Length: 182
Figure (tube, rainbow, N blue to C red):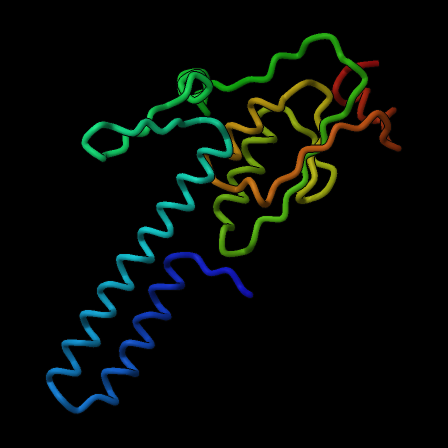
């Protein structure tokens, strides 16, 4: 089954609604279809919101608290507060401590429809000092998991980005020279 975003679901709903309206001849039928389209429209928004909240739960950045009156309050977790206060894209740097002889390889396959986000990710990685191995593969010699996770969460691209730690890379000599590790 092909996954659709909420915008695509809304477009499909409008097309289906237009088709249904063109086939109905009574005013009562029109109102019934419009009422059903409105209800489905709200469900799409709710599903999108539910997915976004689920992603935040998975990242452990928010917690949920149920209130006595039946309402729910969402709270930034300790990790979420730290992340929110720690990073500023313009000032973000990765500390270059002693090299642990591991290479951090970032690979991504971001769809064409998210071209601006893909280009922004490439810009951020280069700005942080990552070396481009291929158009969508970057390498860095120092610990960068937290900073990378922040960027990935910020742009909501977790399913498109992978981080690999490697002990060996065949062009290590060149990389050591470029990162001034030799």
